[in-house]
Amino acid sequence: MTPSSAKVAVIGLGIMGGPMAANLIKAGYDVVGYNRSPDPIRRLQDAGGHAAGSVAEAVREADVVITMLPDSPDVEAVALGEDGIYANAREGTLHIDASTIRPDIARRLAEAGRDRGVRVVDAPVSGGEPGAVEGTLSIMVGGDAADVEDARPILDAVGRTIVHVGPHGAGQTVKAANQLIVAGNIELVAEAIVFLEAHGVDTDAALQVLAGGLAGSTVLDRKGHAMLARDFTPGFRVELHDKDLGILTAAAREAGVVIPLGALVAQLMASLKAQGDGGLDHSALLTLVERLSGRSSGPPS
Ligand code: NAD
Image: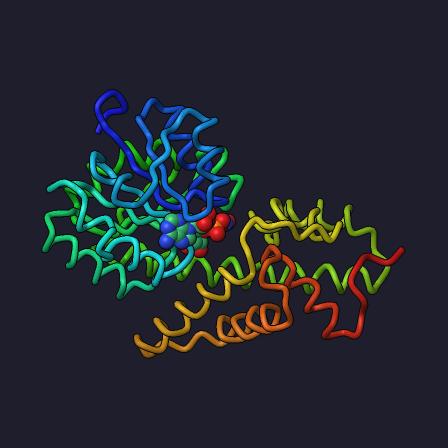
């Protein structure tokens, strides 16, 4: 799968898929893209990619198809539909699903792909928009070893830490654990900020020293200052994290595993969405923590 020979179709050119496609173009791949709305397709063309008018057209000549779509039903429709990937791709095409979806759906897609001669791996990512732009994503891959090895050069062009974690669906299970840790971390950073502000502490100075100790985290480094400034431009939308925590709590129940803090933060994320904030960055959990203490949004003036 070398840049000079491989044609890559990318379906879903949003916050993550757009920059991932741009990095594949930079690495020398011939990239064709399709998105439901037109603006992201124009951005792909500006970056040197080709536009397709449908999923079928995008995948027909492709060696590799990457999907980067919001949720399980979106990936199912795009992969399994009449105008979709498996009905139109060539025999032997490799489908890398980088979306975050249910592990059982990832396994179902792998089976459906096998029936149509399409090889499937689940390869959800972590690192957010900056990781997608910088090409430094962490990618957890589930599937057959030979297919994962074939996917590796493509994944190397968009990520830095690429690990084969097990069979089909295992990538999605690891991603669900990732979303548990990230959501819990954001909630605790939010609580710390509200606590510090209530005590009138210099929060810039506080976050600086916290980041250097055991309390330090990528969440603190990447989101702490935007949270202090109440800049909740996504990023990763609350509605997508709510979806992921639904995947997590269902998978935990299925395995008979109790995750008390995960369940609590899932409820808090759901509340934020229910109150109309689904389109904000997930760090907007801070506003909910403020409301719980009867404090209005914003740092003390
Ligand atoms: P997004 O909403 O910005 O992008 C999704 C894109 O898919 C949109 O441009 C939309 O128009 C397009 N789309 C939807 N249905 C389509 C269809 N049927 N055919 C063609 N295009 C279609 O979302 P995103 O933030 O890029 O997230 C994509 C996936 O990556 C999600 O599963 C999310 O959970 C996961 N993810 C996101 C982040 C992040 O920080 N944003 C990080 C890691 C993983």
